[in-house]
Figure 1: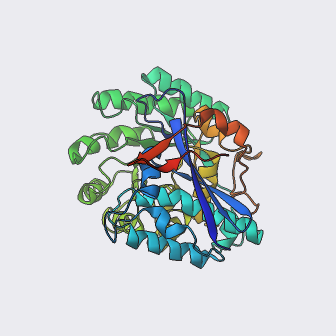
Figure 2 (figure 1 turned 135 degrees about the vertical axis):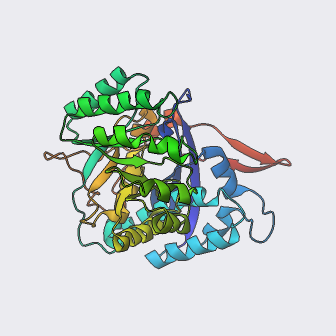
Length: 391
């Protein structure tokens, strides 16, 4: 079968706020081939991602992503890797290309799995999808009391692990941050996993990040996530060398395998977190998962949006016994929940698994999504390059 169409749908909440919540908008991707469709989701700003798919070429290796995808044969996983390599070469100077192609690549896996009647994780070589411990992925409150209440709510909802991120952390001093860490621990109780994400707030400031290690240790945090810019490998390694009990985590900003490999090799991280909607899709994420196993690093998915993205993010490490913890969007915006009619729900033991169903196992209901559809048109010199497709 050949890829006949790639449709991109710009979705957004009625109001976009300044909070670091990536579930406020989305770029949903539909790929059609052989009478079937597959679905994916890009983790990137929708409008520039659409533009990367349709823009005129600037030169031989700055071509629109669509030129390398439409009309391509899609019969096996090797075809997905071949198309990915074509995009990488032909669009190497189009920096948005990896983000745009990530959602397309997911949709290709979904479509192929549906055609073959197999879940994606089986196409990746796993015999079964192992249960994972989901952690509630939450934002810090504006005050320690709000953080405490959110932690208590996560525990009440059955989560045995939670990650708090962004918010005021790193902006008001070490003691203010320590109060939030302590509040999160108090709310979760003594036994739950606690992780902290500071969203690159320290830039390359090693000492500022190191000053948070003691209060993080006192709160029993499992990891400190993204203390520095994604490429600040020396700072990552230097912080890891302080040998705190809390390990360093990162990798969500990697938009190719090489960026993730460098963080593994030179950053001395203990947890590598990969977003399938950024790195180029499920195939590159699986490569990183294999690298992590070889280096004794724990692989973790990065997901803060829909359950379509959640399912995609679980596929690359679905069968890894060493990597059991899984990011779970516990409080997404209504848009993110509406993207799929079904959801990945914790079982009686509080665990989740990648769906045992063809493709990604998720159902898209256009009627649920349509209220969030942003009518979009890209016009160049009187020619329409893109117009919102019909669902």
